[in-house]
Length: 356
Image (cartoon, rainbow, N blue to C red; front, side, top):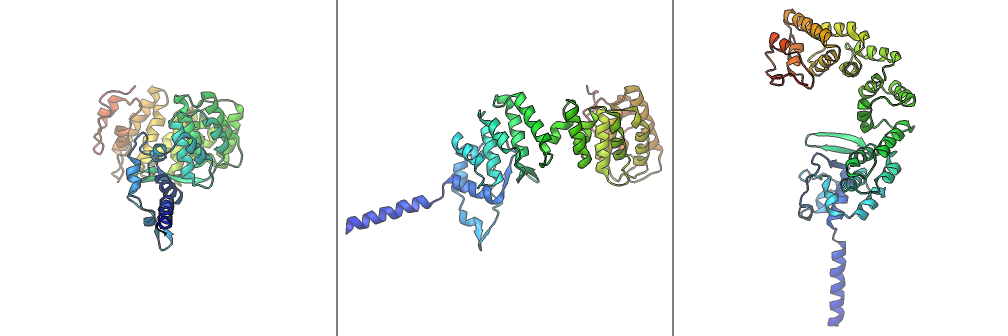
């Protein structure tokens, strides 16, 4: 009887141990139910086991509901700390888990220089499921396919994916119908030099369907005269929505065509008249667009603009151009104008020396 009791007790203890969730189980549970990951601390690793040991999954279940535990911030390194390559690979393909799990697993493999990334990208770049990503107070939603492309592109330095494969992946995403234009792809396109007519036609088609700053910048790089009106139309929309101006000015900065000079004068007058509200970001881009032209014209245009603003009737945003001019950095600014038109609002030190 004692032996039987001992056996039963042992079985109960074994069962209890088996039912106790592992740290990986806890992590997957949290990722699945919150579907968000903090990607702001790349390269930082913690003692994940000690953190997760303190997690009681019952804290997440109150009155039959799943609740967020604010004190637990899930960094993208958690899965990397807990899993083998094979476990991560299984999680990448396990659609029973949330987008956060699949993306974080792929990110971990990419950071390790895993050699099987390209197949995973091809299998997942069409995945339009979303997750919340970010860190601190800034969070946004991103598509799974976009993040696969992004992390694979970042793994080129480790030799996990070739430059050719990365470019092919971008083109596949660009030309694949019925998927969104991913945020990652937009950022790549706005900086990418012109490729060929097929890429141009596709970008133009997508811009007409869904106008945005990145696609307009991509179009501008092709220097096609048929697209001048796209940029002009955005530039003249300042009475409606300021994002239109940002798009146009960013496009002009990469294609400073003479066609826009008169329109920049009109925008300048609207800024001085206070029609753009606070508009510091727009005015910053306005200055960068002007400085993209030949230096002599840009210098004269800015000198005139700053003089007109300084003489304008006093308004709430009277020195918007002057302030933005002093605050603007990353481009070569005429130092003589900095001294000629001091700013009372922006006492910045960016221009102690002309930038290259």
